[in-house]
Length: 214
Image 1 (cartoon, rainbow, N blue to C red):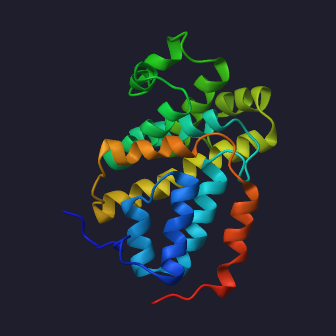
Image 2 (cartoon, rainbow, N blue to C red):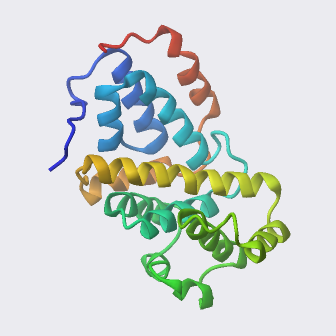
Image 3 (cartoon, rainbow, N blue to C red):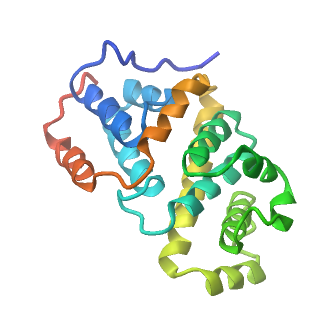
């Protein structure tokens, strides 16, 4: 059972409602984790949503390939054995064009010998696992491969995506966030492709005007 109650999206108003509206636009739906944060700490939830969307989605801040970041999020969640986040990130990865068969290969090291991933995709997956196991700092050969294949911006953004989901994995496991239905999470597919950066800026610009119940 979920440990902390989230907001009721049918009853919420004011600044809390704006957070969920923005999430529906940029992520396709509002997760139970975001509802928990919005219910308890809405002033943090708004910044959390901005960071999440800018790091994870396409066109809202990050310049690297959204697929590479998406794969990093999946592998991070798998490595941490976070069922909630693995379901979310896997469904989103499908929306980005990855098949269930490809995602299944990521549950272990099978992806490394597969021809279903490019060299950059394999490296992004491997890097995310190293970050999650806190081995990235000490794996010189892996770092050298990252430097050969990716720009500094790509390395930073893939690392940000993995690190962000390490935090999110811990939050969801700790709060025992209730997993939404598959159909509900497939709404993420409506938020693939380049999103309107102007809308993201408008959401951020509205922060000083938002009125919260807490």
